[in-house]
Image 1 (cartoon, one colour):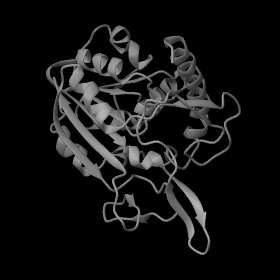
Image 2 (cartoon, rainbow, N blue to C red):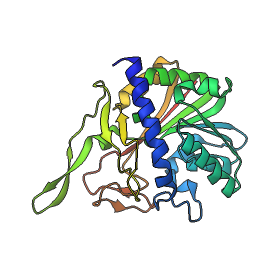
Image 3 (cartoon, rainbow, N blue to C red):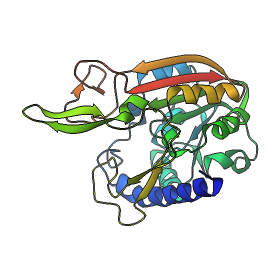
Length: 275
């Protein structure tokens, strides 16, 4: 696939996320009409891995509505959120202002982050939970991330496990919907075109710009991209829990998150690397 095709697909994704934004703002999924609780999107192990954030510069890549970015600011970080959707950045600024939390939001494609941020460097770069699948070139992404980090800084990726993205429901007679391996775990086959008329939240259909393109990335691809950019892998975690019930058969855990019944499989992973 050519660079021009990648750019065209990412422009389509940008338009789709612009169109998704008003749907997401009004959805119960984010609960922005209620008391804002951005910490609910974080697993407990994330805070353990991130450590003390007070007084540190934290960049949240592909931040969408910026709810997680707000959580960093609430813990004392100088937080910056970056997203390629103009509608998302406008919405994120409004959400943070209403919450009374100081966060800077910048509109830019993640590949252009260094220029958009005036070559600024950070102690922590955070990304994930449905972000990497919208990037066609992980090696280029990792090189950008490495340059965004100060020496000794950390990148922390908390992302949906490739196994989760490979599973899909199929009705089983007398047993209800059964999850089967229906999609590739590994990447390398190019962009996957999806009809994004409906998003992962509740609410109405997206009215226009319904084309979306995703790229599958196995964990080894993510790790090798970071190592290839000169970063050192510090920790890898796999978790069976998600912050919302993706499938009806999921059950709530003591943490308030959700998991599948037996057998246990990873649905989320956390990957910490340093410069």
